[in-house]
Length: 345
Image 1 (cartoon, rainbow, N blue to C red):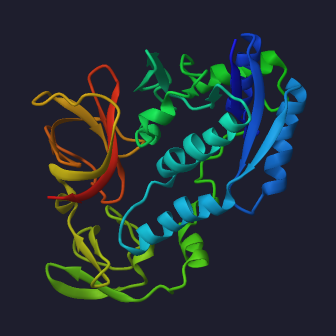
Image 2: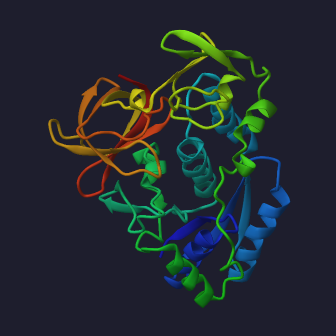
């Protein structure tokens, strides 16, 4: 049997993950990340409740400095530049499935297991990432930036579970003390989804008023770029003869460009900083996901040096936001690549 470190947060998913591995006869210990100063005591207490119940060792990994640099600063600077960031995907890539993994290996772990809902197959030491059996909770999109070298040391014991209710029933049957604990819906460092207050907290610059632009003309004043995202309709504070949407954010000119909903629709875009997880067959129809909660779209994909050129093959009903993650899938749900949307044509 193997030695497993389990990323323990105090939530039900990681608790069931650890219990399953113990029942399989593995040697298990828990590792908990400290990522920011708020709620640290509550986090440790919740994680320790689980590890004490299971009777396994528990270690704390202080990654606050790394998380501030790699995730929070990235989040803040992206919004200030007019981009729409995805901090959870960056955290998986640089912190949870990288820094925490190295910490766990340093404690003697052969592998690190997490409560992610995604499928990982290992073929002769090569990791292959797929969509989860749990379509509602699938997290393969957020894992698409994680390197194949890190994924070969990762395991997802919940990958066969088709619904979160099954996880809770397992937790209850195991007698876990947190089986009824509710899921967090927010980005961990952005309480109540108030990202503007987080940006203001960590930014040295204040929100600077600028111009709303429609058809090349100024039609009003915005209250700071960080308060707007592409596709936004509500909260603009402008009345017009037809509904207006944010279609572009120009950080260099400090302007927010508005337009009709049709102006948001795009069929082509470029993806940079690509993370290759499988062969991308030339000329074949593949799928791309450009938002975690949205469906996948048929697309043709062309590899250009360190970028991907994506051409959608069906009408796109949502805005394509520079800064967001794009994940590429084949028709069997295998993740072939992930990257950051650079711009749309």
